[in-house]
Image (cartoon, rainbow, N blue to C red):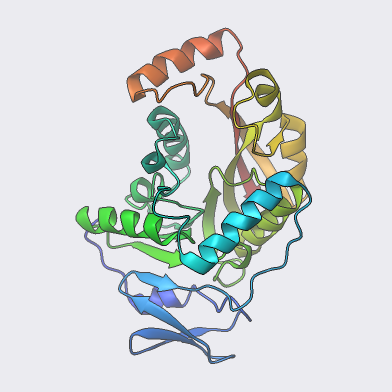
Length: 294
């Protein structure tokens, strides 16, 4: 939805204070919670909506401990350090072909009337393309450098319906049951307690019959290749159980990323190699689930 500027008041009406869920109102160049009176910085299409206290989640293993340290670093410093680029293609760790594959699947579930949220949006691998097809898109992340990079690209492309929220995904700053589609790519991988807590929060902000789309690492593939061994992984049965635990109906589950990430494949190389890997029944690196709330 290019060149279509939305009324800022209609956007603010979708948001809520991350501390107590109170309504937010515009006051000069910041937002104020009508309940706790806390103020939040707003600069054009950027709003900082971090909670005053983070949700306490005790790590249950080494994977969750690692991500807990990263989380605290982001809260304190805004990024993971100048030598570490934001998550996404910009980090040179994600094959462009895989991003294109997932983006194409996401696009089939978006229409021009939808309010969409990208949770853990990084540098905008998916949010920038999907914003062109929906009514409004919220790009949610905690990394200030990733947000800055995505925001510059959005401004360069003239996207007027994308809003950048620096927020904690355990306390998404939205009213209950307000979003038509929530998607979360390369995030449900950080340990059982982390993943369940995030799933519960995403379900909270999703409308009845709304879509939740997310991916996870395939445990069978991880055993074979030892790729992404630092991430939590799930079997197909386990990830379906996680979704249904939160009253989600799994519409489709698709394997993505059949080829090993031994190099940064170009888009064309990825399509060809991925096709042959699928033909010989090599297990996919990830599962992509399309779920619906009920």
